[in-house]
Structure formats: C-alpha cells, structure tokens
Image 1 (cartoon, rainbow, N blue to C red):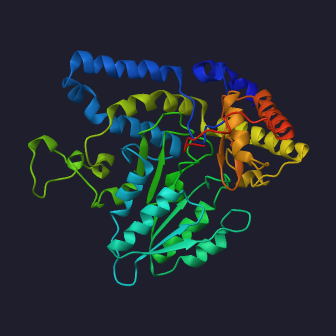
Image 2 (cartoon, rainbow, N blue to C red):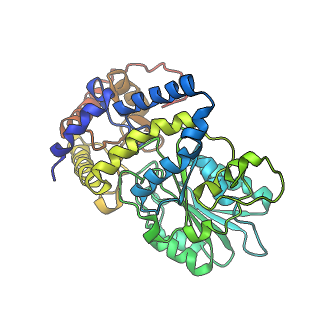
Image 3 (spheres, one colour):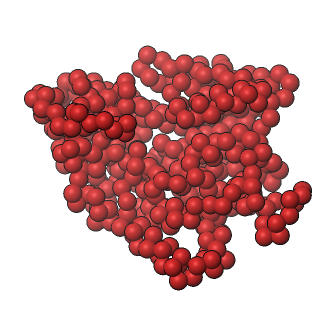
Amino acid sequence: MVISELAKWRDEFPILSRSVYMISNSLGAMPRQAARDLAEYADVWATRGVRGWEERWWEMPTEVGNKIARVIGAPAGAVSMHENVTTAHMVALSCVRPAGARKRIVCTAMDFPSMVHLYRAQEAAGFELCVVPADDDLTVSTDRVLEAIDESTAVVAFSHVLFRTSYIMDAAAIIQRAREVGATVILDTYQSAGIIPVDVAALGVDFAVGGCLKWLCGGPGNAFLYTRPDLLAVARPAFTGWLAHEHPFDFEIGDVPMRRDAMHMMNGTPSIPAYYAALAGLDIVDAIGVDRIRDASTRMTARLLALVDHYGFTSAAARDPARLAGTVAVNVPDALLVSRTLKARDVIVDYRPPVGIRISPHFYNTMDEVDRVMAEIASVTATRTYVGADGTSLVT
C-alpha cells in the first residue's frame, strides 16, 4: 500500500486543516466524530439524567475495553479502563505482594518518570527497586534487563517503546526471562498500541497497560489494563472498589463476589465523558488496521531520518526500522526554543531533554508535511529567529 491510500482519513481530523500536526505520541488528533459522541453524552445527561447509568454508562468500560482489545490482540472481556496509566499500573502492582526473598521490581531508566516514581513508592510496602541503566545512546540493552531478572524478582515492569527515543524493546525476550524465574510482567504499551503491531496474547504477558491519549486518538482519561484471562480469574487487586463487584448496588461491605470480566480490575466510579471521547479514534484505528498504520509510519520515519542527515542534524532514533516506532527525535541547538517557534507557526511538535524535538507522524499525515516540518526546523536553526521564546508554560 502507499500512504496516499490513507489520505481519505484526513478530513476526519479537524486540526489537520489548520496545522501540521506531528505530535501524536503526546496527544493524538481529535476525530471529528468525537465531538458528536461527546454531544451525545451531554444530551443523555440532559435528557435521561441518572437513567444514563443503566441504559449504557455502567457497562461502557467493557464496551471501550473490547474495542481496545481488538487493537492489542487481547480477547474480549480482558481489558479494563482506568483514569490514567499510573493508576492502571497501580492496579496491576496491587495484585503482587513481596514474599520472602522475592521482592524486587525491575524497571528501566528510560521508562516514563511517572512509572518509576510509582515503583519507588512501593518500597514502603516492602519491595526493592532495580532500575536498569540506559546506554549512551539512550536505549536500554536487552542483556542488561535480562541480567537484572532473577529469582528475587517479583515484578518486571517496562515500556514496550521508550518515550524519548521511540526505541522498541525486545519485549518477547524480556517476558520469556521473567516467566522462567516466575516473575510477573507489566508491559507498558502507551507508545506502541496503535502505531506498531501489539499482540499481548501471543507475548504471554501478565498485564499490559496503555492509553487512548496518544496513537489511539481518544483523548485524556482513557487508560487501559489488560489482564491475562487465566490470571484475571484469580487476581485479587488490593487497589479496588465497588465497580469490581457483581452486585454493587447491594451496597454490601463484606467479602462479596467480584465480577468475572475485566471490570473485576476496576475500582471507583468511572469517567464516562472520556469513554465517549475514545470511541471514534478506536473505531478508525481498527478500520485501518495497525499493520497498515505501521507501514505508513515506517515510510515517514525513514524520510525524517533521511532529512536529518540531509540537513546535518543528529537524532537519537534507531536507524534499524525494526527497532524504531513512530517518533524521530531531532537534536538541534536551542531545541526548546525551536520547538516553541514551530508551534507558534502551527507546526505542532514538542521537546524532550536530552533528545530534542520529537516529531511523530501518524497515518493522517503526509510526506509533504514531513518535508515541511524538517524545512521549518532548518530555517529556524539557520536564522535563530525564535517566537515564543519567553514562554513560561511548564508544557513543552
């Protein structure tokens, strides 16, 4: 297939008519249908009121979770919904207790900081944290991770794709080693689901977390947790709540039966508007297919890297396409100021230290846009004409 065959989807994303939108690894573009779906939510609330819960809302976590399941290779009824990925991680972690010498959590220095903060906080519960260091190129050696996993390991929690460099970890090898020593695996798919093929069932992972915010074009508030079905049947998360019960409206506080599907892993009352926002993006990704998205992405990231060389820039991105997901980081002098200038020109990218400007084309982008963003970077770095350099926002 060629990228032009995906051009028909561009009209479904309003921001593309006014911006070069190249930051889907941070926030995917909003589908036009999402506004209509959110309007439907508002109409239900306005006209049906509390009846919305029994008519659709209460089971919406399952509805949305099953759409996600189709994208990540999970069976129906195995994906629960959560407010953010940190919460989803915590639910998975709460199923594991330190026992005897088995109390180590293994993660990497290139995992998203929120996750490492969470893992470190578990030391108060008796866990020990092992953070596998990064290599000089900001990747993480598979061998180093494998060496860190032994019989003292309780949990291996790692990112499928590293957020700074978009480097694809060897998930299969790490999961296999964890299983050999009896450790639980939590795979973070936030930067992989929707941009590279993911098959959690084939990987045999215990838990997988991710969210709709980025490549799934579903907005904030839509994180997910896959639980391996046989594990789901016996899991007893310590982070739980009334939504996980079979008969929550009995309002019992004793040892009550839990739901048998993925909502078994949920806790408090969910955020219904976020679910409405997620529907359109999930349907579009499912309709296109992640294999086709990956093909288009690979072509565009290859073009980005060719232009990095053409303009004499540097990049921490892997040159092996099998190890590069959807983002190319471009490092230039004053990268933060260049990033802010691009955004002021409606070329939407972001900046992450120390890799520089992250450029993340998705299926709705074009090669012309890839060429434009790199030409804009070259122009700004050559002239040092910065716009918005005095910005005070914490968001970069």
